[in-house]
Image 1 (tube, helix red, strand yellow):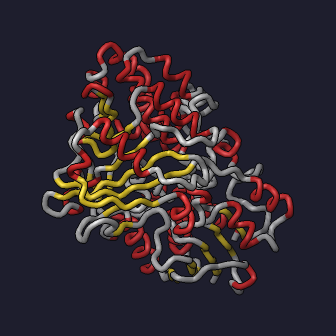
Image 2 (cartoon, rainbow, N blue to C red):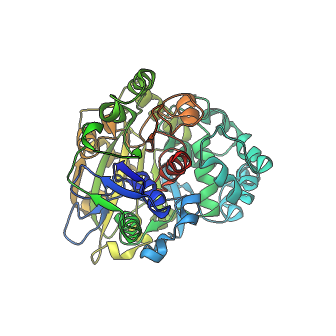
Image 3 (tube, one colour):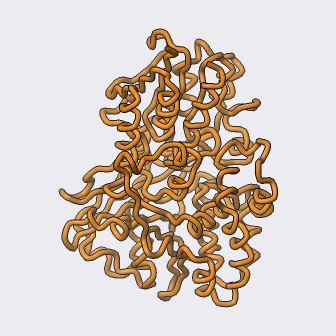
Length: 469
């Protein structure tokens, strides 16, 4: 029997292990932390009984990806739930914009931009089942549905700042800016529209669901399916050198490129080691977990029903904040992404007290305390929030990086999503998962299709490994 070793138990590592084990390969997964999961963990971070997601909170592609179709996580106990409003973007003066599953209903709230929003996202949503299959893999591939993919391809390459000119109202422009900001890049860069188009279309087609019981339940379901197939997860064991692993026929690294070079550099071609060392990481996150009595009193009422709230003001203010972060400067008013998972999963709350997870975009390696800047942004659109706060727990960039070595400098998307790294991953080649060394593959969020607890990168890397075994 072939033997495979997977280093790292994030969603990609576990997806790779499950794919291999399902094909009859003997698999062992090593995880440095005491619990598996990587970016898909949950815990009581503020008060007893309040369940917070430590990193990933909403999962737009986890229910529809090629990996989700190959393995039934719901049969392993995973349940999904959706908020009434998928995401909202409050503005000054109590106004704002919000997105629901229906494109026409969302567009109806955008005034003079209603038809423009429908023309922009409607055609993508119409064929998004096949489109999502195409882009949730290496972008450089022979498409099975080229005409459908072209609908995304006509919209994704443009800088997000250029796409914003399609809209006239401040509501539609702000809604677009919140989507584009998920890319952690300046809006002037090519392809900075890609993440906004894909996430916006996913919200209308699939919604942005949460895992009932916390994102840790995704990990629990993956581990359960893996163990049913004979796989093993070993926690509390940091792999420092590939030579300590004994015999293997395939090694899959759910690590940052630099981490892969540290572990397997002795077996990798020198050109690969150089490329992995040069890999550029992006902006960072500064996280807050809040315990709020009675929920957040948003002035914009639809935000009170939204699973995700983008807190950054107008499109121009969002763009300015992302530009400052890209230049290595901490903005006075940062972009804040806030999750109200309890709206879809009420079991996370305790009585009237609800858990809130949010993070601000900050410069890579930012060593300051952004707590006050985040709270000031929230209070700006939810006056009276501070009086409702029962607990605030900050997680600065250095703590994020210490808890998960893949998140270098607090970079929770594992790499700057500039054009070359988005298209090719950390090194040029026929497959982004290949390292140039026989039997060794990179399968983290640093390779296409990138971040998100959908496991596709790990699944595709494992299929590549299986084709070589």
